[in-house]
Length: 202
Image (cartoon, rainbow, N blue to C red):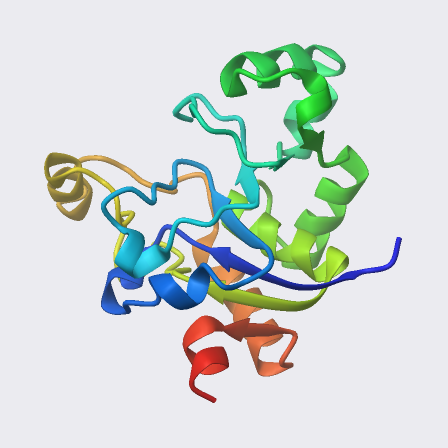
């Protein structure tokens, strides 16, 4: 399948609040967002245009009223092996949409991602970047903090932010964030992935 031109993926890192890129974000042909993203109240920073919803169909996923035109689901290979066909019912229930309305990334591809990164259970964010590298010629990213400088998402409520920052509410415990960051940084060095701030102000 020929690769499409350009995609912008907005992560949920708190760093998005450092830039008022909303207007520029809305001008991209394809904008992808991750898991429990929100645009309401944050339009100045993250815009509102959403073409692809990348998610892990996880337990904490909030059901959406407006489903973007494309939905891409990443599930760890071990769960895909264990659940088999039953996984489709679980995804449909969690996303509140029928099987025809989302694409589940294959177990072979998910295994390939783990191999590439040298980690098990990569985050939805990192998986979405790997997916985009296969499907688009140019991949732009914004708001990927890898839970390193800040453990919270830009749209987390105040109490949750406080509990996470204090270490009382664990975030991303199942993931190897250092390894994921190292891999994505290497792609940035190779100019295969471009940070939005560099793309807008070269």
